[in-house]
Amino acid sequence: MEAHFPISLLFFLMPIIAFLYASVGHGGASSYLVLLALYGFAPAEIRPAALLLNIGVSAISFISFRRAGNFPKELFVSLIIFSIPASFVGSMFLLDAKIYQKVLGVLLLFPVLRILNVLPVNESKIIERKFWMAPVLGLSIGFVSGLIGIGGGIILSPVLLILGWTDLKQTAAISALFIFLNSIAGIIGSGVAGFVLPTYFEWMLPATLLGGAAGGYIGANKFNVPSMKIALATVLAIASVKFILQ
Image (cartoon, rainbow, N blue to C red; front, side, top):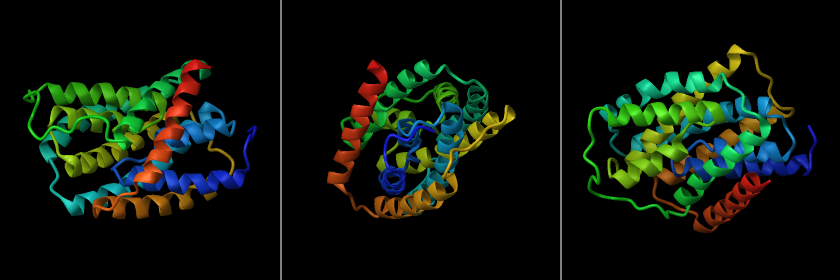
């Protein structure tokens, strides 16, 4: 590891990221990936660490949002039944570091748009859902998620909102459980070839889970923290440009 910033800053930022992502039903893997990459950890260490943190935070977020509203079970099953095996397969591949950073840079744009509520939320269905649509969506997102080391919620939730298939709370709940299960599939797939975790991970995990627990509760109970979300979106946008252009 080649640390470019004080390690204490990492333990300060991790729970804040978890708090903000859990407040919208996400696990935060995309931002954990960025932070760990900035600290000089190798992709082989970063991906399983982000997935493990994702599993904990998304589980907490799902519990909070599940209690706050109804859950579209049929849609979720149609998505996840194809997404899990695709995530498992995708996680068995390790991208070249330069390609990995550019793909991550593009994917970082999704949480920026989601956090800032730039993407439209349609109350009526824009496209009537056919039986094959959710499986294809789940398969596609699952493979990309496993390949990069995320749960896929940052891609899934904007799509669901734009199509009008779910409302905000349903989207948060379905995304959180989607992330949770895909992250488990991804960590198992990564483990097929063996993996190592970053230094200090045993301290990252509890701090991140505490932030996620607070964010899930607050997000599900209609509070919001606009200034913090704007700050996070700004950081992610800068990181996105940096990864794409370097």
